[in-house]
Amino acid sequence: MKKLPSSPNFQFLLDENVSKNVKKLLQSMGYLAKTVQELRKQTIKNTKLLDLARQLQYILVIYDKDFLYYSYLPTDSIILIDIFPMIDEKILPAFENFLNKISPNTLKGNFIILYETSFKIKVKVGK
Image 1: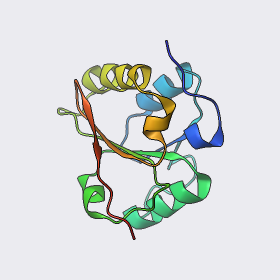
Image 2: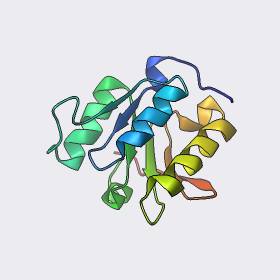
Image 3: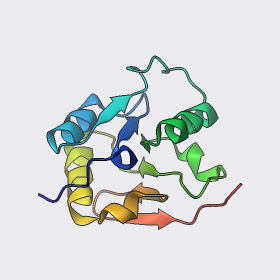
């Protein structure tokens, strides 16, 4: 199992609707992962959530497609999970497979859309 380097650049922040089992998966792979609930930010607006991820230098993990329409900084790192139905039986293997296949530099500063069997890097529109 390939592992991303442990550093502040490779820590994950999970939005409130992302399964706690995604957090467990990340932790089992040796990564730090926190949920917005743990940070007591569960009702935070999307723009504030993005600001929080920037401040913490975390990779933001989301399901919310509204993020597709925001402007981003070159340092923003986001993974949008676009798998339906949104059930652990589909999401967990896809997420683990994705993390095992990518290089660490793929995550840094990219907006990644994760599908069940593939992923793509979205071109970000800067601020």
